[in-house]
Image (cartoon, rainbow, N blue to C red; front, side, top):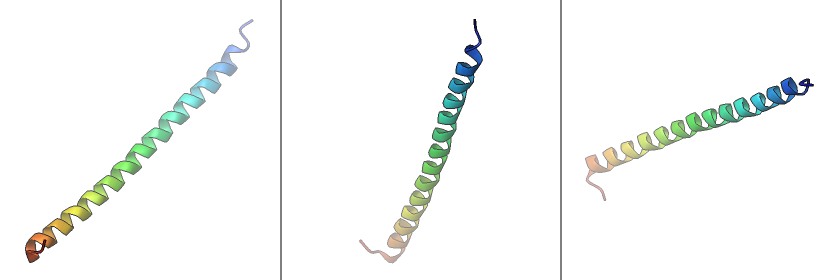
Length: 54
């Protein structure tokens, strides 16, 4: 009677874990881009302050 349960459970598990892995990778990728942009902005700000430019 419960022969369908393992099939449904495994499919559900794969979908949930796959979605979680996708968002974890996306979050880390976005954080790396944000950190790189922050570093670039800080270098530009430092260079501008050293030269006294606007």
